Length: 112
Image (cartoon, rainbow, N blue to C red; front, side, top):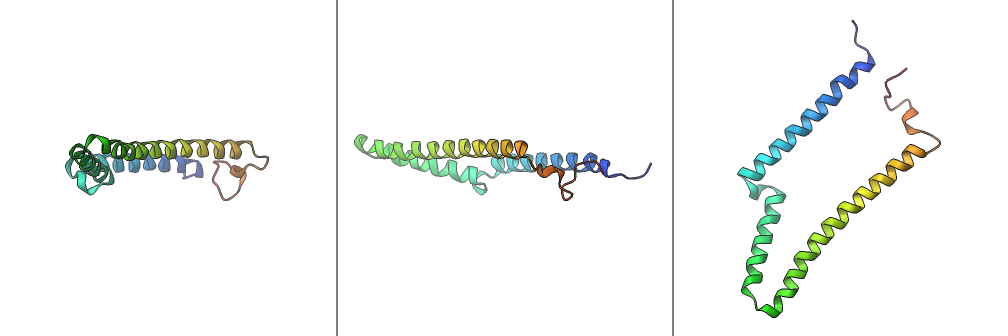
């Protein structure tokens, strides 16, 4: 049995999944053990400090502080939705184009 191009998927796909899983396990470990060294922990720390500051100000000024927190959450939700929409549009455009980019000799498609 000799090595063929078709076997490349059998190596690359599991390797990619393994790398992705290892990265997410490492990120989870860092978030649980050393949260201040990740952007997730940094954002959580800043939000806690912001909420502590909100609790120290008068009730009439709290609206401004809460609006800032709400706008941050709204912005992240908007950017995530935009990313999904753009990905869907690009996927639809690539799939329906008359010149299929997957037929290029540069991109491996599994057949000769």
